[in-house]
Length: 382
Figure 1 (cartoon, rainbow, N blue to C red):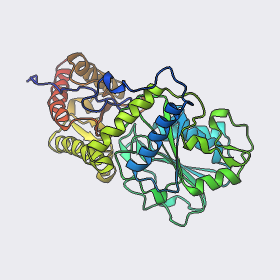
Figure 2 (cartoon, rainbow, N blue to C red; figure 1 turned 90 degrees about the vertical axis):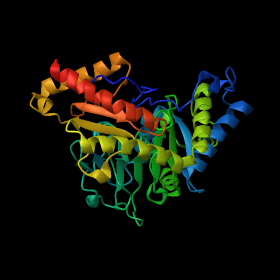
Figure 3 (cartoon, rainbow, N blue to C red; figure 1 turned 120 degrees about the vertical axis):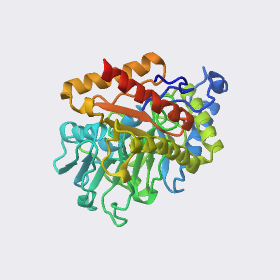
């Protein structure tokens, strides 16, 4: 039967993600609009965002946290273009964004010594084959596959290379082993539900040493430059951004950080996200209609939860018809106002992708489940 109660908040997009519970435009009333970001108030807001990011995430005191242009993409590209080439690099890819970094390194940077370690959607590459003498680039959480690395045990403490980690769907939702990571990037619009356009880059002392000792043999656009005269541009990490940031977005980020502290900081955020995953896990265990795309339970993402549709009527369809049927399910839920933007990523297998990060209320996921089951039956009948 058609459910009677809809989620109070039907926003389950995997980016931009749902705002924190209770958010209103009034949350931005203290934004210093019309002021220079280099004025005292602007720099103060930016420095506050940097300091509180480090505090909540538990970033080591000798690491550097900076706000950079271009969302997470800009932050990752900045690291790739500025640091790679000093030694060989292992590129790990098991979903769309990791594959994008492979393309940039092989076809744009055109580095000579590149090893590509790939896995299909739902799986991880063999992490034991990563060479600690080489740099390694990887996503902590595959946003488009719902597959995360379960831990950092595969990263050597005695590595000579740098670990460059795209953590955009993991930061603030998963424990990141900072001693294993040299470059970490993310964007505000994921786990914290902030507005887009800005990225965060976090550098270990080893990453800073690479920047100050290695000069790439390629031109670097201004927005990728982290050094000047062979020294780190310290202003990037104290609130003097490379280009003009939106102070409205900065205010929104500060509001999200306030909320994160109010729910218990990092561990509170993780707890909320894992409670959300538990709802979807219970559904998968009892339903014949859905299954996690991730094959290993230890790698199931607690933020971007990707689901295969396993109903017999669905699996009997051709690949093209499966894609069409999945789109009908998503469109039906959208039309009903029960769930928005839960279709699988365009390059992923046909199915569903439901954001379960900490800005989502567990009660809303509990209400969503019967709606998805209903929509599957409706599409089957059509």
